[in-house]
Length: 286
Ligand code: G4P
Image 1 (cartoon, protein in one colour):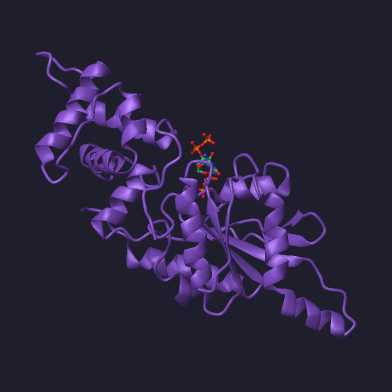
Image 2 (image 1 turned 180 degrees about the vertical axis):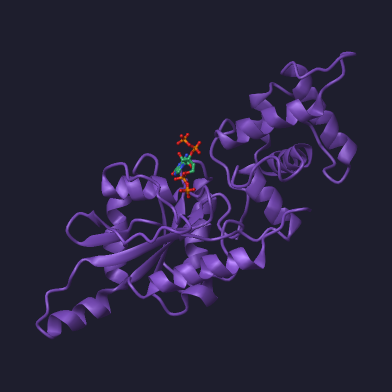
């Protein structure tokens, strides 16, 4: 695999998040519900240290609900509250504040006992690219916030976005990097569209996706392409490629000479997967 993450970039991203931690009460860690661990930065515990944190499993509308429930339990066993959400439709938005208040209850109680009026909870959203950070910020803000990003040479004062009366968000989310040295992690990220198609070979990614679909979601997969999918030996690459070719034939992905263009067929399969054409599915289980 040829993906490189330059240590310098990582160090800078990390520094930026660490600076922001001083300003906030709680971190909102955004993960993709279909691939919670693969979409997570493996150094996150080290970066956030003891900062209170809530995990949001975004794009839950696309994920297998049974598997998402397993993930909620997985995180709970690890001492973290995880809440499935769907930032694009706004599902479970009101629960985010409620859960953050629960997590910070001790701190709030202390302020109350000293006769202080607790101020709005200050939060920072962090996550890898494409996980839905901007969508969530806009949804919580109830309006469109221009994606400013961190531009070199421009020192921008920190802006707070009000979420009702009880919460404020930092306007620029913390951008984390995924770690795809593990090939399976790379395939999961690519299959969900978290990393660009140019980075990995699309045929390899589609091959991985087809194996996963046959293993876990065979009925929906066969139905989508009106195929008879009998017993398939998933350890035999030829059998898997034959199925990809059959899909290519059905979808008119042909090249001169009438043979199947496997790259085109792969793009069709990946497009269908990313847009939920096989129904709700997860690519990773606890
Ligand atoms: P980022 O800031 O973390 O980089 O992610 P961003 O909000 O830009 O979201 C990346 C893509 O994920 C967007 O789609 C967005 O619509 C989609 N998305 C975000 N949250 C959800 C969700 O809960 N469910 C679903 N199904 N999709 C979600 P896009 O195709 O890049 O753009 P567009 O189609 O919205 O224009």
